[in-house]
Picture 1 (cartoon, rainbow, N blue to C red):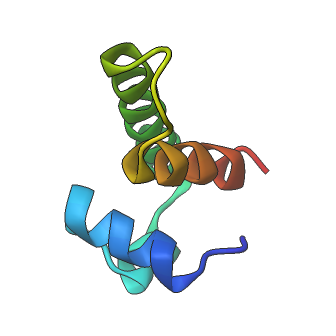
Picture 2 (cartoon, helix red, strand yellow; picture 1 turned 30 degrees about the vertical axis):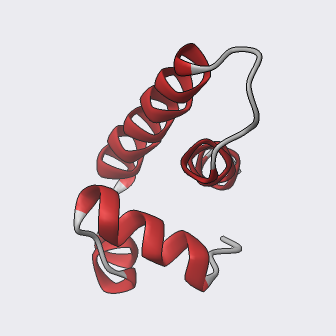
Picture 3 (tube, rainbow, N blue to C red; picture 1 turned 180 degrees about the vertical axis):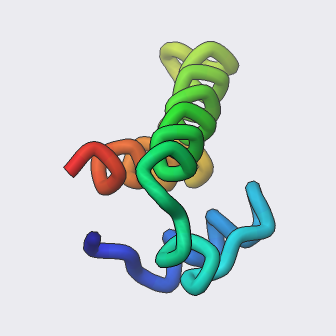
Length: 69
């Protein structure tokens, strides 16, 4: 995965997860994290469908992309 510090900060603030937590996740846990990030992405788009992309949306979408690889 191409996780960077920005992603790690997002995971920490949203889910209280660290890189060690992420590395210890099995496939079911990673799928759950994927679904949570996708839910954030949907929530953020719904808040401002025509507005500017928020940092939270950008990071959630990026995590969805990374977790789907």
